Image (tube, rainbow, N blue to C red; front, side, top):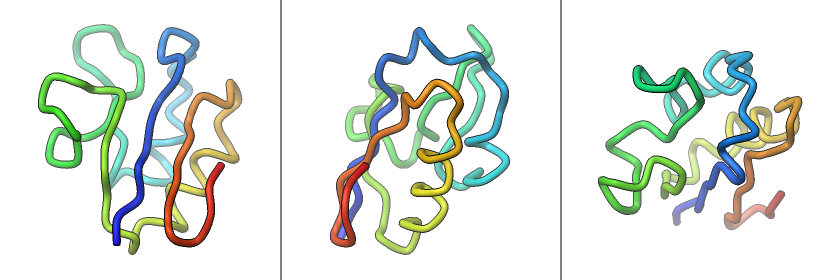
Length: 83
């Protein structure tokens, strides 16, 4: 099973890096604008840095990142729920 992850609206990212700290296997900071993005290997479309699909083994860290994001822009849907 996979978890669909999105960063929306990404423009609201304040680059505090909490998502990277809690779930660095899924999120990284962009070298271009310094905002959070989905790591390339998990992107649903290689050109879409806002959407990805990750194995359900990342459910806990994606959940922690989503709930800890100060701007609440990380969302997900997976076998164990959504946020």
